[in-house]
Amino acid sequence: MVFLAGLCALGCLHEGLGTEPNLSEAIVWWRRSAGQDYPPAQISIGDAYLFGKGLEQDEEEGVRWYRKAADQGYAAAQHRLGNCYFNGQGVRKDVVQAIQWYRKAADQGYKPSIKALRKLEQ
Image (cartoon, rainbow, N blue to C red; front, side, top):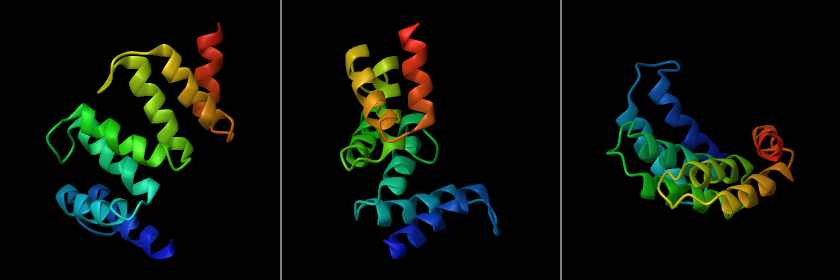
């Protein structure tokens, strides 16, 4: 996992941490580690697709990458997937599904999901 974390960290090229920003190069490194089931890289690829940053915007493909990480129990991905269901991004809007994904992340102590659930309960 350390090696995959290193590959994913090379994705920081998109922010120019220690080098000139290069989003296309960052995506190459994210893909390498995402392809080996590393959740932080998978959500980075999902973000790139969902928001069209460095890749052609494709919300359904973004959701597919979030789901890969969420299915591994990665709380940040579960939260993002909940957001997609809540907002109808890349999937049909489904508040029940959103709550289920938020709950999975909240059960791991993920604060943004805890906050989202509290807001939905009001």
